[in-house]
Amino acid sequence: MNAFDSADCQKMASALDLAWEIFVKSGGLTPQNVGTAHAALARGILDVAGNGERNTRRLAISAVARFARHQEEVSAERQWRQTGSWGVQTRHQI
Image (cartoon, one colour):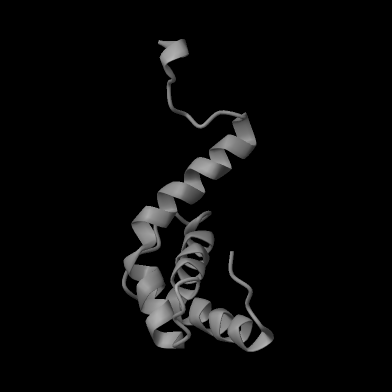
């Protein structure tokens, strides 16, 4: 687990704004991901910042590059919160 100080949090907030701008301008925002895109980008920033990165631009670019992986995680978590199910069949359901 990582602890972030206020300067780190400010850098990550700026990185999220930049990541969103890059993502939208690149055409990444779609009707299918509009509800989860912001959270997926934030998760990407936290992932990279947790490894020690503090450069705002690198955090933003890494978040956009990792978007697909984090999008799947965020979507699955939202489905679980709404339905109580991960949407994956277990051996017991088959």
